[in-house]
Each structure stands twice: as structure tokens, then as C-alpha cells.
Image 1 (cartoon, rainbow, N blue to C red):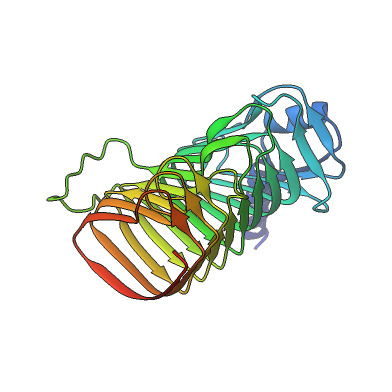
Image 2: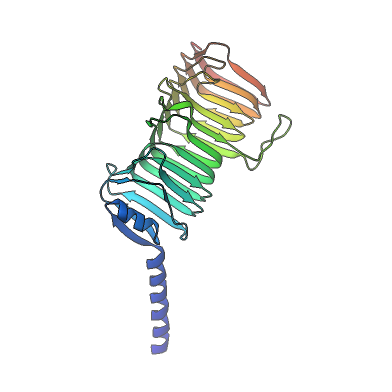
Length: 306
């Protein structure tokens, strides 16, 4: 009996030790603490005050799970230099929540990334990752101009209950999602490696400063969202899409303008285009509405002042 109890006790202590190593938490209040946490095996990093950071940081990917949390949303994680930010690579589960993030975020080869309850100001770039944005507010007020606020390559992105705002810092579109290494023609079909973009119950505004969405080789699903005030000197103030499959349901498009083709949409060589029960208001282009070369189209919408 004693022998069995001893074996059980050793087993319990071993499990506890493993849990301490791989699920350690640390509360931080300055950059030195933050640097220490990232270079150690801390899986839960809690900010109890705002901190400013002087350089780029790369997350330690030796553990499967890393979580960065603010004790309140007023907590600011600020990268002082516009070119700096947080680099996350080869992490199984990565999460940031309940804070304000000012800087850039670079995500590569991460299986599960969750960004929730965040006010974000900066650039996001990601490749070969799965990302969830929930209760996420996006802005980019950097002095240096960028083509896209969010650039995604071979990514699955799910957006829910979030808002995105354009600015003069973005020259083309708020969000561009593409799939490298996928060669498509109109006679081919969508590739299983194509990117995925699901947008639900969200809001996008170009603020009359930039376009909104651009997709290439992407499965796009846009549900119950409002997209307005897109402005572009390129094509398609709301959506510029090629070699993609597109489904939209119960969306509102209003007050969008382009100085080229497609006040709302510029859709070329897409495999499927379906929009149902969507409303289009007060949107125009200096040239023409542009929808060309598609395999399937379903139209059950209301159009006003296009």
C-alpha cells in the first residue's frame, strides 16, 4: 500500500513539475521584465501597467502556448519605433488579449493565433498561419506609408465583431490576402492551399483614405457586415478580387468611390461570386462597374445610387 502511494506521489509531483515549467505565469511592469519573460519558458505573460519597448522582440517558440494579457484594456504595449514590433514564429498556440497594442505584429507558421479585445495601431503581416480576430479594433496612424495595413499570405483568418479603419498611412487597402505558390487560370479550380477569409458581424471604413479588401486565390465569406467610405485610385473601393470564390450575405455597402473601375467591386477571373440580400448605396466609379470572367453568379440585392 505504501509502495503504491509512493509511486502515485512521485507521478503527481512529476506532472506538477511539468505543468509549472510549461504553464508558468509572470506579471510584468517594464521592458526588462518583458524581455526576460520572452526569453524564458513563461506561457502566460500578464501586463499590470503600460510599457514602452525600444526594439524588435521575437517570441520564444520552445513551448506550445504563449499568452500575453493586460489586466485592463487600457494597458498599452507600445513599440517606440515604427519599424519595430513583435515576431512570433513556429508557435502552436499564441494569444494576445485585453490590451492596446501600438507597433507591428509579424506572425509566421503559427497553428492557432487569437487576438481578442484589442485596440491595435500598426501593421500586421502573417504567413502560413491560422488567425482569429474577435472584438478587435484596427487602425494605422504610422507616419511611414504602407501599401496595406494587414498583409496575409497562405493564411486562414476569421474575423468576428471587429472594426477596421483606413488612414492616410495606407496607400492601397486595409487588408490584402493572397496565396503564394498557387498558380491558377480561369479553367482551373480553387486550390486546397488557397487562403481563407471569413468576416462576420464586422465593420470596415476606408475613411475616404484607402480601399478596403483585396483578395487573390482566396475563399472569401462576408456575412452581416458594413463596408463604407472606401476610396481608391486603383480598382474596387471595397473589394478587388481575382481567382477567388466569394460569398456575401446581408451586407451593407455605402459611400464608396474609386477613380478607376468598380465603385464597390472590381472582380476579375473569379470562380464563384454570390451576394444575397445585400444593400448598395451611394457608391460610384469614374469608369465602370467591373465584374468579368466568373463561373457562377447569384444576384438578389438592392442597388441605390451606384
